[in-house]
Image (cartoon, rainbow, N blue to C red; front, top):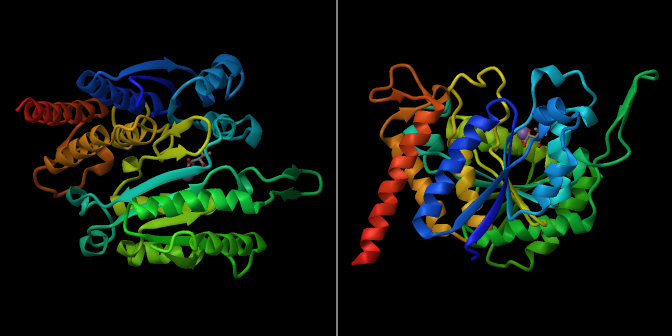
Length: 371
Ligand code: IPM
Ligand code: MN
């Protein structure tokens, strides 16, 4: 573990800057605790970068990102860019950044937090104890496959779903290795009843599974998986899937937690790991103080775990989030009518509450070490 960690912050658009700020507050608290020095360099990306510099990923942002130990992103996207072609939109900046950093395994945990059990439209007895880790392949499939085009004259558009065996092998290994540290089960999701790409996917994952005899592998078609996730979320441990299926299923799985605002993510396996909450830029509530920072704060925990080797500190943040929820604090997205003991708080207030509980946990652990 290095005692100096250089983090490029790319807060981006909409609520990105607000929630990223709260994530940074937690990292700074951890730095005070254990002496690790976090250096933050803030750079523009997405719509903010288009407005400032005419490009969603300016070269200086990319350079800083490549020269850091981890990249922490807020969100990209805004309504004013909706009519632009895909390669000019804020999202293109994020996709270029993902590609340049090289991380191919996007980890998206979806956990049913007990204090939020009434937030999900699913019954508490369905979600109780659910703890799923999506491993979404992030650099292949329809997102990056070529050829791609939209010929307005002929009215024909084309995207290419392409995977090589090697791309499947490397992400499958990540999924199996993570399953070995969890409940030893991988559900691989595809559409092998229709798509050749999925047949390659399924054959390759089956082959790699042989290297991990202690992990049970099951296959599901993506349509069936979408249903099983809602019916029996506890049956899933690690869900391994390709880029677009993972994009869709991870949003669906937010229903288990009660809000998309709760989901963190980490992208590993490349030159520099990239950390981003799963939620988007939510331009409708940007600047109103309503954004839920917990997805970003939990993303900071993932950064500590996967880029700094600080497992204890990562867990401290996760525990702090749980306790703040148990105490009844809710941002607007988490608030429910007729819930006793809930207190509606702003983005900043939520960050302060997590910070306070995190400091209590830190004090407690220091007191124990002093004994
Ligand atoms: C996500 C987002 C992105 C994606 C967009 C913003 C490009 O939806 O991270 O899930 O589709 O990967
Ligand atoms: Mn998405």
